[in-house]
Amino acid sequence: MDALKAIMERRSCRVYQDRPVPEETIETLLKAGMVAPSAMNSQPWEFLVMQDPDKKAATSALVTYWSMLKKAPLGILIMANLSGYRASHTEFFIQDCALCAGNILLAAQAMGLGGVYLGLYPKQDIMKKVRAIYDIPEHIIPFAILSIGYPERPMPPHNTFPQHKVHRDVY
Ligand SMILES: Cc1cc2nc3c(=O)[nH]c(=O)nc-3n(C[C@H](O)[C@H](O)[C@H](O)COP(=O)(O)O)c2cc1C
Image (tube, helix red, strand yellow):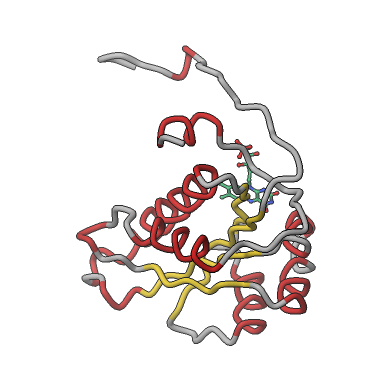
């Protein structure tokens, strides 16, 4: 599947087949995240591969909208390590990690997987609970979770182009 097709056809996938994601596929997903652009090439991301059913279930139970994670064969927690930034640039970790997450979701789509972004940062109370489940140290920021698996059924592409959102040369 080419990149443009993956971009155009990606939808959030919340129901998965009972089928594991092979290790080499997981590695490709992580590599896709690692090649995302980042401010001054800081590459702040670290990853926690979530496969343990009990920990995944505990995480899923933290937020009503995270229920799909329990049955997902794979979760990828994207975390930020700010140690590589200049002090004046640390806030760029938000864009950097979001781009990293986008890359992984598109790579998943391109490989026949489906995924959904589960928002975590900046919800400090939930971040604290996720830290506790996975023993994440204080200097690492849990940023977002991607719930990933083979889709149970295809979702129709958006295929929209709202003209009113496009401004040319003047607002
Ligand atoms: C910051 C952010 C947080 C999100 N959090 C959740 C979530 O907690 N649960 C969920 O099911 N989807 C979540 N989503 C997915 C959105 O609901 C989804 O992308 C949106 O409805 C558009 O649908 P689509 O991805 O199929 O195009 C989140 C997406 C983003 C970007």
